[in-house]
Length: 314
Image (cartoon, rainbow, N blue to C red; front, side):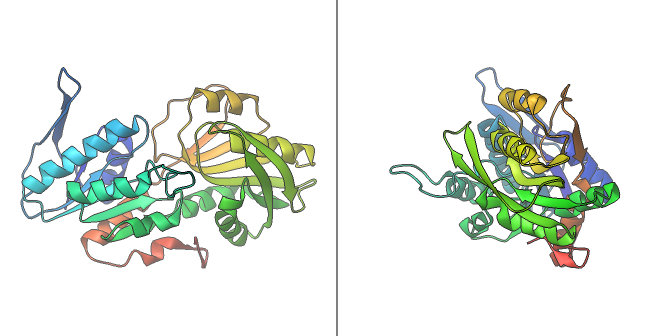
């Protein structure tokens, strides 16, 4: 088994290798003066089970192209099997035609990954689980919930209510509520634009309770901060937000600084510089991804990675 990584999230790749106890594979990735990417695999991979780690976070197109080129290099170097490890799957929100004459880019990316040489996909907390069906190759879809649960269990928050900031996240919120033995509520929202939302009402009892908002990803933090504001008005005591992928841009950072969210709990699926004025706790999913890679390599079951505290994350 050999593991290689692109430039998107090298610290996570090194942490995964450390958790397994192997060295990260050597490869050179350089830009040409005209912006084209050059990749050279610096060691023999003939007949090897190879894992290519690359989060497709911003700059999304660049990171995707880098992954395609790396997999093509591995395929041409006669790797036996190539598993594309995408801790964060970009373009996942474009998973359906919700307007006339728009693409289904999540499906296009799936096609491109297979065309570039992927024999298998390992990913985490897809925005929509049906994206697994866009592939005609095996997909192992992990959840960050077991890592989040361990952290939340140590906090021992009394009177906890898990809240989904929109209807789409209700299934995830229900899973968290079950394992944390907490209440469940939902915020009804209306999206005004790609960056702006309006929270309308809370369904469920949250007055005087500690609240845990759960979502799979946040970028502009509009959904989270508006939901938190409404929950505070309705009498919520302390508000925490639990997000698998925090791909925060400047708008998101500014909103979080002004928001009533006491703590944002996220993972290292995407790299992030330290942000002043926002309490962010970053938990590592390297051990979880490393264990999945080990099991894929030995053709063992990864089913138990979806289970924790006697329940399932989905």
